[in-house]
Length: 89
Figure 1 (cartoon, rainbow, N blue to C red):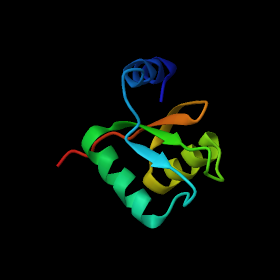
Figure 2 (cartoon, one colour):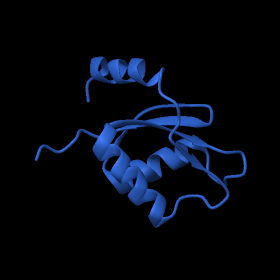
Figure 3 (tube, rainbow, N blue to C red):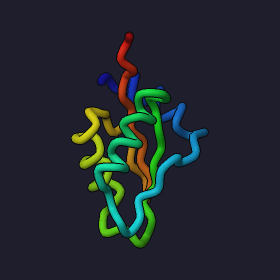
Figure 4 (tube, helix red, strand yellow):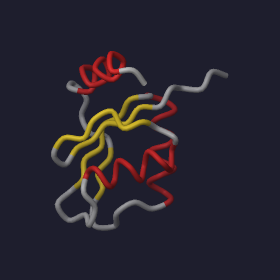
């Protein structure tokens, strides 16, 4: 992904609210499936990591990007943004 594209996605992500929270249960198969489905519908999603989680936002972002084939757009504090282009049917 080029820097210009990444900057545009960061701009779009500013107005997004987190749609998932990662807590003390961390990341399981059910959460990966739910995030995968959300990426298929929305392409760009924001996720927050609660203080009770054993993961940092960067760790969670890397784990989820590997599991879903998404790209990490940004990671700020306890929130991160993932993007995956929707597959054309």
